Image (cartoon, rainbow, N blue to C red; front, side):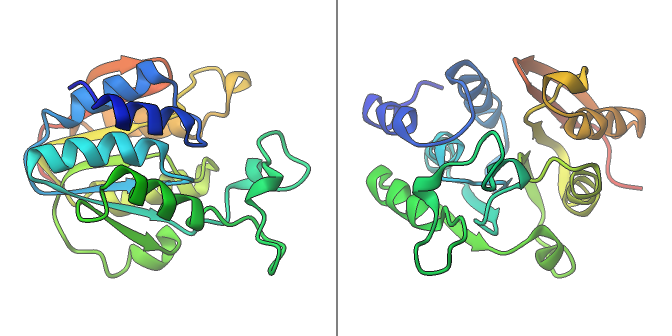
Length: 210
């Protein structure tokens, strides 16, 4: 699915870590997902949210994007991907929520996207809604990545799309946690891989959770 030029320009200038070829593959996969509720874990400033939200709006789906908005480890001061402009001067903490709000307003996607500000550990115990698409792009430590997969993939309906970002078989290229998630999903036999582009892996649920 091609993105409207104005939205494409907005996504391109929005801070984030998804190359355009991976974003295009994500949109294409999302276009095959059944209408329903979609969940994005890991929002940052909303770059991938624009891509997914545009497809959700066109498909009659609704996207929930979940993030605590204080950044992952690599976004903190002294780390490689720290952006000082995202520090809240009042709290001294990284806060990407204002940037996301501006992104969604500029994109005209506020009706198609719900913003959930929390950790996945806070949300997982009460989340019960079935999903037709799940995009995992949150914290990349093994503990949290495995938690997010276990807690939310069980809500993905048969035929649903599971997209995992920052998948690197060689941990020297970017960490191994998302790679371990993909391997677990395949080893469990409930998913099959249907595509990949760069560090993005695309899977489809082939059976219900036992």
